Image 1 (cartoon, rainbow, N blue to C red):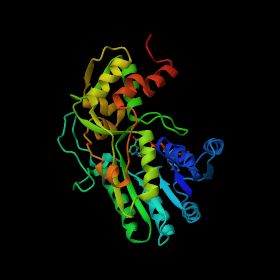
Image 2 (spheres, rainbow, N blue to C red):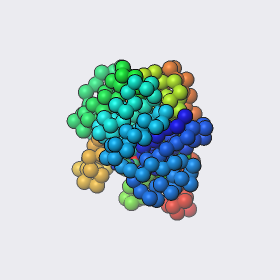
Image 3 (tube, rainbow, N blue to C red):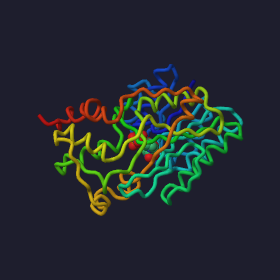
Image 4 (cartoon, rainbow, N blue to C red):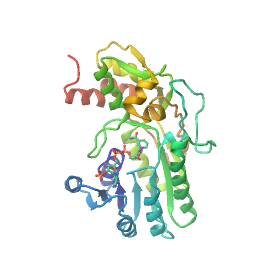
Length: 309
Ligand SMILES: NC(=O)c1ccc[n+]([C@@H]2O[C@H](COP(=O)([O-])OP(=O)(O)OC[C@H]3O[C@@H](n4cnc5c(N)ncnc54)[C@H](OP(=O)(O)O)[C@@H]3O)[C@@H](O)[C@H]2O)c1
């Protein structure tokens, strides 16, 4: 298949593009920069130079491919409003990258018992209402001749397969620990996020392209842990002995902005039984804690000269 990937230079889109390429597909990758275009070309991906505001270009490109993966921005309504009508009635696949922060709470470092699946009703917090509206528009095209589907990744970790090698969350906690000389979590750090390894994530896109029914929604996870557990693993890999400390919410907000509250202090617990059952998705990547202590994050620290000893 010929597949258009937005975000092809990014962490998720780049990994998906690499996985699809390796599976024998032809990839056209959107990028805004000259450098992105030449790096994509070197990786065997045909660059499409433009931005998410190049709506006519994107609609035209969508008409010329067999499927579209939208992985540049989960919250942008204009892109889906431009591409989906161009696919209407064609039966082509369209995969929208959303995220499980759509069900996140204001945990403030405390644990929640709630574990969501695709049919669990919820009302997103104000900052995620737009994302839900984008999802709903995408899913509605399942009734209009598009094999449209949505995936909600959780906290993604591990080394990416494309140009952008690492996600935001774990590296940010690692760098914070290095800067402060101690591993921190916000509040008590008992808040829990489900997580998924990037390679398993990329495999899920491949399966969705092959067999997801029109209008389907999937969570993606292969485990969960609290922010305190992540901080403790960071403490161990940095040679701080495994101890962690609390970071007051006000300090976190002033350094990290609203992501402190929305991501690092919240809960986002889901299960991905549906993807396992319906798509036969079998995540097999390394566990997050092990990947921090012994895997790609240890490797990243070593490469950046930040590993003690
Ligand atoms: N990483 C996670 O754990 C995670 C989990 C769930 C959901 N998400 C969501 O998934 C989306 C992608 O995340 P990511 O981690 O892959 O981000 P990323 O590594 O920053 O990649 C995003 C890519 O999108 C492209 N892009 C951004 N703005 C664009 C624009 N205006 N026009 C054209 N291209 C644009 C950029 O490509 P160029 O610079 O080459 O143009 C960039 O390489 C985000 O909305 C994120 O919130 C991420």
